[in-house]
Image 1: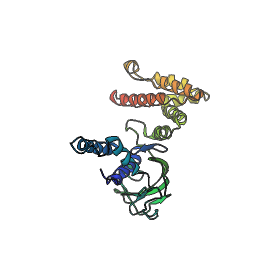
Image 2 (image 1 turned 90 degrees about the vertical axis):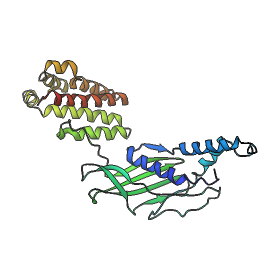
Image 3 (image 1 turned 30 degrees about the vertical axis):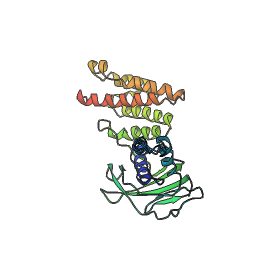
Image 4 (image 1 turned 180 degrees about the horizontal axis):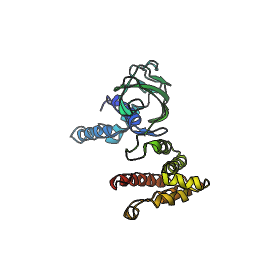
Length: 289
């Protein structure tokens, strides 16, 4: 494996693609060194041959490969970026292709491939860099999404997105309230689980309040609690449904307790979210209007 590892550009590009296609606001990824380790292992096999013991070890080769990423990362074709150089410590810049990504298009109402535009900027020449990427939807050719990414050493983190992320919701969920469910997951993914718990709870309560039986109850008792509204809803469900399917009333109570205790319980959020989806899928199966 040469001193200048020829696959650096691919590894950096793949990290950006994974970040922008799979991660959410304030989440990050580290470079994947699997390829380096595989190549170093092949070189180590050469070292085991007679007369080749002077070659560097597998560990040394991996460390050499990692060092090739310590220079500036420069997006190919960026409108503004530092010039490719060899730094004072001998660290080469890595010039990488800006990847296409898959993300949600608010105009198309679905996730589609997005292509990079010329509006890419890279700021900083060391390992503390900032990148601004602009993408355009391949489907509608109208929607633009802009990302801000922070590089910290050999890791990158999504620090900004315009417009704010929208997560598609399961079709079984009531459309009028689905924005609360989507926003709950945006908040949770961004590390604001307590806000996500509040929004899941809001989703349930707003759904209850959309139903005629609950509307009538609230009209008679304007100060009705969420638990009381849940009891009215529960009374509209068939007995076999209630015996087998997660209860929205129970989910609501757990979310309320976590909210009032300021308990940022990520496991509770995930469990309640899964059970909410299961509840509404079951309503469809049971053909409950």
